[in-house]
Length: 274
Ligand SMILES: C[S@@+](CC[C@H](N)C(=O)[O-])C[C@H]1O[C@@H](n2cnc3c(N)ncnc32)[C@H](O)[C@@H]1O
Picture (tube, protein in one colour):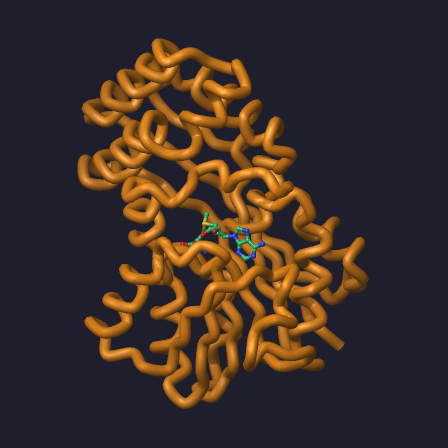
């Protein structure tokens, strides 16, 4: 049986993902969005704000977005409507079972994209192999994932390091790699891409203004006690309810720091399909 997605799809999780745009989350993809007719597959689209943004940049093309959970689709469809974007389609779908999806076929897409998805899979290599199959010769597979161990912050308040250690341990019990961002290129090589066909880079998120801190800290404070993370943590015996409450307090304290600064580093790859 597959393990549950660490965050689940609680409102706090969807809110966090809804802040994302192509500009703040896919800078590595921007140089490739130079043709308005591109056909894009967005794997693990969640609430779809990146998806809709992608679709708005290829007005004569289209974006097919899949996710095994439809929990984010309402936000996604509403967002598309608000933006007047009609060349996007959201379907329940799993990258490992894409053959079940009408309109998804081998070599069918110019760009196959996944943002913050491989870190949640037990078989990221298998997923990348499927994404490669779905890309046209001359097209690209574009992946971006975080590296939790590389997160850094100021000031170093008590409680933040235990939060990070706990998150990493919980992800590992789910057999996922929370530090996958640093080895995306290595997985792509295993999936059959030549090293010379892979561009590897990094992209960061910084949360420091009061608004940015309110968003980032608020999301983590809520997620810690309301999402699947809580269930996985308690069930695995890695922390108690009291430990989780301490983590919430830590995030709420950090949020109030005028000098607060939190940086997230993401690994990014563009793989060119021959
Ligand atoms: C962290 S969210 C990222 C959402 C979106 N890409 C974004 O960045 O806003 C990861 C998403 O991957 C989805 N996912 C998990 N397993 C998947 C699979 N096998 N195939 C496709 N998507 C999957 C989850 O349901 C979840 O919505």
